[in-house]
Length: 247
Image 1 (cartoon, helix red, strand yellow):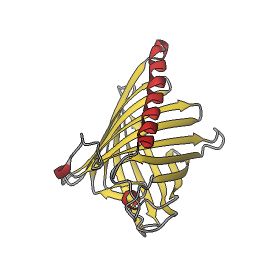
Image 2 (cartoon, rainbow, N blue to C red; image 1 turned 45 degrees about the horizontal axis):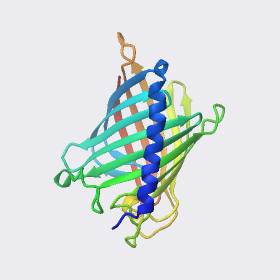
Image 3 (cartoon, helix red, strand yellow; image 1 turned 180 degrees about the vertical axis):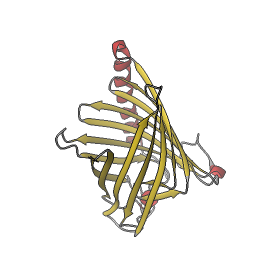
């Protein structure tokens, strides 16, 4: 599969634009640069309604400067059959956040991390999310894959795999909750396992969690969470539990 010049140009423009935003923020010294990190231990790894692996260890590290952030996030299971490494650049413009992500996942026996030709296991995905308002904290998000060997539809053609999600956080007593629904607008069989179907509801979820600050520290915390996830497109359901550590 060949990547056309027009698509390469768009990827370059998006990365260059985020680099400009980063430079501007880093020059604003009064804002400073901050680092944060953490890890989750989950009973099952589910991504946008699709079960990716069993129990997994998922570390993260974020650098933020003003409105810009760069995040590394990974997932590895306990039988060495699956690993993932995602790098995301994001820039917040008020209630809108723009992002470019390199999504890499493959089995341990076929790493190919530095392969970026037509066989590349990487996916380059652009995204935008919008928080409607403080009174109506619904977040609307859209993501589209621009590059990646696995970004194909059921005919083997470029799919530009896209995903739309609407989610709303709320609190029940002291428990943080979030409910939402995610949809795939057109066929993206290799990414979302949708077969030959076009539009489909891919991810219906209800999340609950609670965290506690560790005494004697300013920013370290530990939490527990559960995610109930239905995937009507795949006729599947997953109930995930996990423990989180933040610093």
